[in-house]
Image (cartoon, rainbow, N blue to C red; front, top):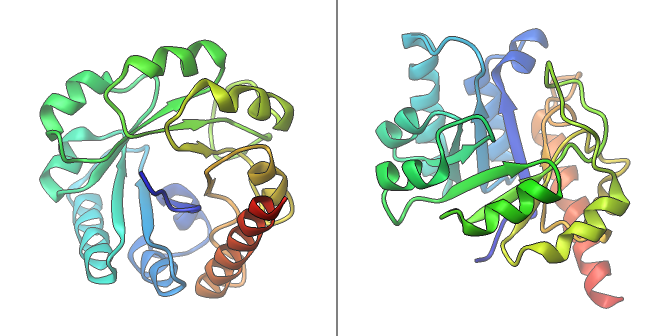
Length: 216
C-alpha cells in the first residue's frame, strides 16, 4: 500500500499544555498539506473530547485526509476512522473483527520480538519506536536507535512508521535507515503557533529526503 511519508500525531495533552485548541491545531495541520492525521488522547474520553474527535474527523474528510484514532476501537468505529493500536490495547485480530476488512489498522512495536510477532496480525502497517528518546510518553520503551531500525527494517514487508523523538533535525537519518514514514508529535505543534508553516516544512523535508534516498 502507498503510505504517507509524513505521519502527524495530534496529542491532546501536548496541545492543551501549549495552549492550543485541538480542533484548531488539526485545521492548521491539514491546511499545511497533511493527508493523514492521528488523534491521540490518553485521558478520560469525555463527551467534549468525543465532540472534538468528531470535528477533527470531519475536517480530515473535507481535506481528503485519512483520520486515525489512537487506541480506541469503539471511537474509531463510531467516527468511521482508521485505528492505531499499541501493544497493550485491544488485540489486532479482535479490532479487525470490529472494524471490518476495509478499515486501515496500524500496530505499534518496540523491538525485534514484537515486530516478528506482528507478521501474523491482520494490520496494514506497523510502527517501530521510540527511535530516539521521547518526552510524550510517561513510561517510554527502550530507545531503538537508527542502527537497530536499519537492522529490523527487512523483518516486515508492510509499511513501517518510525516514531519517538523524531524532529526536523534528525528525520533524514530516520528515512535513510529505512522508515517508510515518520511519525511526529512534539515537533508538530510549533511553539510560536505557526503550525501550518511547520507542517509545510515537514512535508518538504521528508519528500526531499525520500527522493534523495531513491537516487542513491
